[in-house]
Length: 59
View 1 (tube, rainbow, N blue to C red):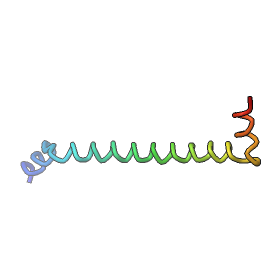
View 2 (cartoon, rainbow, N blue to C red; view 1 turned 45 degrees about the horizontal axis):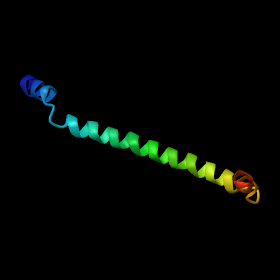
View 3 (cartoon, rainbow, N blue to C red; view 1 turned 180 degrees about the vertical axis):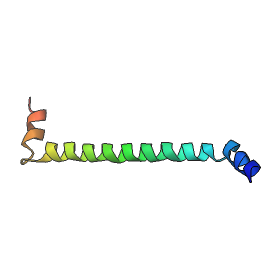
View 4 (tube, one colour; view 1 turned 90 degrees about the vertical axis):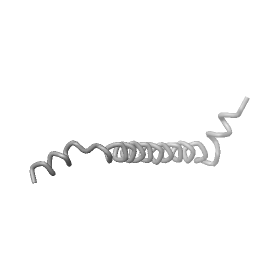
């Protein structure tokens, strides 16, 4: 039993898949959070009857 436990602890074949999974999860959360911030910025830009957008392009 002890030998099997030691073999299990030394086995690193699944470590790479777990690391890639964690990287994908963090990147997904970052992209989702960034999309939320971009949506809020666009909502602010187009709010108030487009006056902010009109003022941005006014000469």
